[in-house]
Amino acid sequence: MHLSGVVLLLTFLLPPLWMLDAGYAGSGSSSTGDAPFVLLLAVPVACVGLHVFVQVPAGLVGAWWGRGRSAFVRYGCAVLVAGALGLLALWSLGWGSWSSLVPAWADAMVRVSLGLAVYTWAVRARPASVRRGRLSKR
Image 1 (tube, helix red, strand yellow):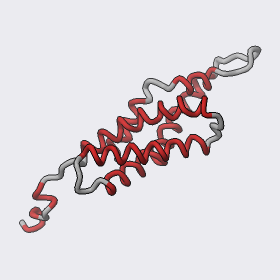
Image 2 (cartoon, helix red, strand yellow; image 1 turned 90 degrees about the vertical axis):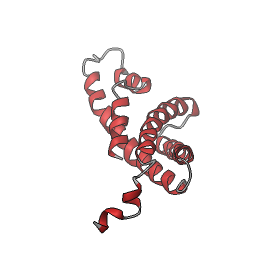
Image 3 (cartoon, rainbow, N blue to C red; image 1 turned 90 degrees about the horizontal axis):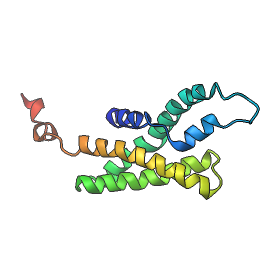
Image 4 (cartoon, one colour; image 1 turned 120 degrees about the horizontal axis):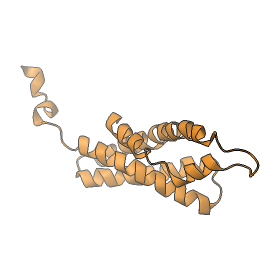
């Protein structure tokens, strides 16, 4: 999961448009000189929130539901769970209208699914010696 978290963090090198809009939003009379500092806080908070509340549970449930199946099935299960958890997380944060929720959800799902793809790739195959316990018999 650490590898998928790093991939998720790397995807935030390009901040989402909704986050940029929120960072530079302000009244017309006030200066927006401090807006980049808001983004410096918002990006790590969004990344940690997505990783802890969406990506980790989705990866674990996807690996559990897809055990004994192909990596594509595990990945599909994980993305399905991530989609539901991401929608629930964003809706609970106060995105009430679908017109503003769907673009933020789609952006989050692209970022989370890239991390889940790396996680699924990393756990796709374990060496047979470790899986069957041969290393402990040495």
